[in-house]
Image (cartoon, rainbow, N blue to C red; front, side):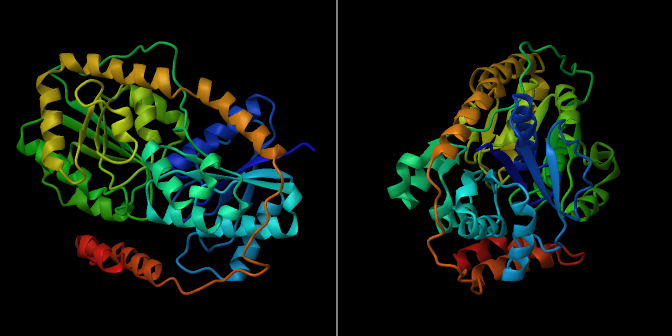
Length: 419
């Protein structure tokens, strides 16, 4: 039986790493003759400017409730099933969200022989682990994008250890690096690309970084690319800056993943201020273009970035240390090309899609040959009132509203209370 490979896009066509990876993989697999589909959930925070690769089918899931809404009814899941059913027979990559996995479980009940599931552990976050554990009965293979994630997943699912593999996502890398870096008389070019979300991405730290760099006398220019529910929040923070700093921080908006390559190539430093990640795809993509990564110490970064050799890592929230590393690079512009070349070589040798795509293609063939996996929790889903998820989502929803941004300062104490 011929089969399709389908990637679910819970956040629509945003600039997040999962979306970029999914769209890129769909294009790569289509390029080697595989039937591929993208299932796009509607997301009101993104513009949908991402170009769908040639030969890739696109299915629009127009149901207005996000598949990771804090509470989903069975009728919501049924709406997702209508869209997902169009991909069968298929290996489905739900990527993330409770709703995406629940819809796949419904399909496993009604058409088990026509569906296989790959569980991607994209990030080191409790929600991801909960989805993978809850729906492990329908998942044929788990792919962890960092060793840290793989170890945690094995601890949670010891009986599935043989089905858990570790491999960071591959990215497109040129055979040779050809680019220039900013001269000492020009501003140091910093770049951030990703979802504009205070949750996980800590985008307010980008503004703190700009202020700290100004205090230290760094001549810099910061370009911020992406969209998300906290875009207005970030715009307000930028607007509140002193004019001499505000003029050096540009919120450039949403662009397509392919356009990011040239933008990375024109930048000197890639900054990442996240609270948690998997192995950041935007970090790998920027390094592939010779950007020097200055990033927080989260899952995946320490496996890729060798401090002082191909970039720098700092503790989460330590913006002072991040500014110190950027100040040093500003004072030692000759090291940009050395570190950038080392960053490029790291990605070229270890994370190129040239090696990743054939590996993933083999995974698909192996998974399709496996026996169907049945949903083990019965014909109905035990939907319950997720108190912790409700508190967390309610907090972030309120904090996203004008005048209530101060609630973000309570996230640390609140996290301890509900864990």
